[in-house]
Length: 150
Image 1 (cartoon, rainbow, N blue to C red):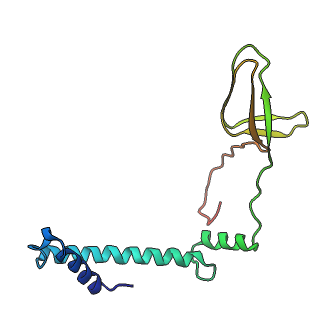
Image 2 (image 1 turned 135 degrees about the vertical axis):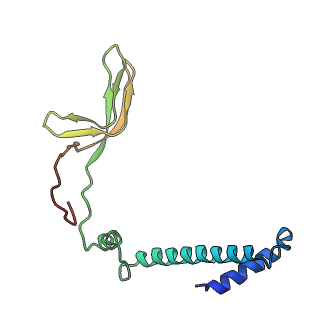
C-alpha cells in the first residue's frame, strides 16, 4: 500500500509533467490537493482490501459474506426455489385479455401458480409464458422490541 508521502510525491510528479500546471507545481494549493488525493487513494485501497478480505470464508467479517461462503460450501442449506414451467394460455373470447404481473391462479388440484410478467392476449390468440408454483402472502406484524433478527 502506498504511503501518504509516496502518493503526494507521485501526484506532484504527474502534475509537473503537464504544461498547464508548471506555474502551480510548487504551490500550497498543489500540496493540499496532493494530500487530498492521497487520502482518497488510501481510502480506495482500504476499501478494495476489505472487499478482497470478504471474498474468503476464513477472513470474512460481515455476516452476509460468511453466510454466502458457507452456503456455497454446502455448510448451510440453499434457499428453496419454486418450481416453474411453461404454459400456453389461449384466449377463446372476442375481447383482448390482459393479465397483470404477479397474478396468482389456482389449478384444479388447488396448487397456486404465479405469472411473473404481464401478459396481453388478443382475441382468439395464444401466449406462451412461464409460471411459478407459489403465491404471494402479505404478513402484517407490529414489532414491539429490538432483536437481532425478525
